[in-house]
Amino acid sequence: MTDRLTLLGTKGGPAIRPGGPNPTSMLLDLSGRRIVIDCGLGVSRGLVETGMSLKELDLVFITHLHSDHVLELGPLIHTAWTTGLDHCVSVYGPKGTRNVWTGFLASLAYDIETRIADEGRPDLANLVEIVEYGPGEIFQEGDLVVEALRVDHPPVTDCFALKISGADKMLVFSADTAPFPPLADFARGADILVHEAMLPEGLDSIVRRTGNGARLREHLVASHSFAADAAQIATKAGVGMLVLNHLIPADDPAFTEDDWRAAVAAHWTGPLVIGRDGLQLPCE
Image 1 (spheres, rainbow, N blue to C red):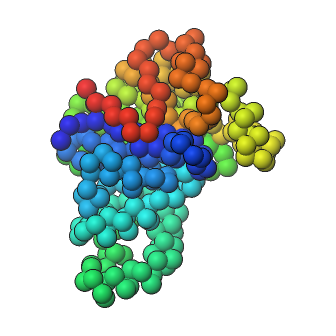
Image 2 (spheres, rainbow, N blue to C red):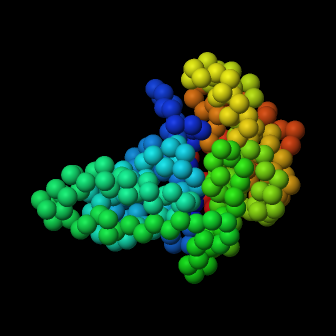
């Protein structure tokens, strides 16, 4: 298995539009493990398009419980189950993740019970382990280590950046966050930093399309990072590559990759990738 990062969904926010990208999800192949990071709408299809059989699913990390990061957690596991999943899936998420899963099971109880009785499938409830985590080291297996850092994403308290180390590589995922200086120390020396990003000039079009005006703008500015902020974190951390992800806006044709590159140029001169759905990056 080649060590690589695949961006499955690169859009910030839960809305989807014709021809546009999907909300947040990623697949990291590292140290012999296939690690799903966040489960926004479209994650199941995105994984299949990489060539992964969903019945191989076994390790998932959720950064926080906004819908664009967790909406398809239950459907992903259920779809894997209908594909032939017969082993335990470990899901690591912040406080409340267990409620998301048990609520999903309750909502699909008729279908699950019918398939168990009619198709001879194992009990889906017995195939999932939920581990609710906080700051610090949250996973270790062989040389694979996952650490969590609480970031600043009001009004969400339990939102965590993740640092995943293995096979002599280190990747850091910012999750959703306002500019957060401690993230630079957390990401120090990372080979890849995947950081959320907004374009200031793109906020007006988002507000117009979404329709809740001043309140939405207030949330975006208070809870997220502009591309220039991500670039400054990357420079302070001395990372090998900056990947802009969870893009806001991600589906406005008025803004191109050139706009994103211009937004970081004053603060970051290293390798830069602008996220797009399906993009695969080798962990070299």
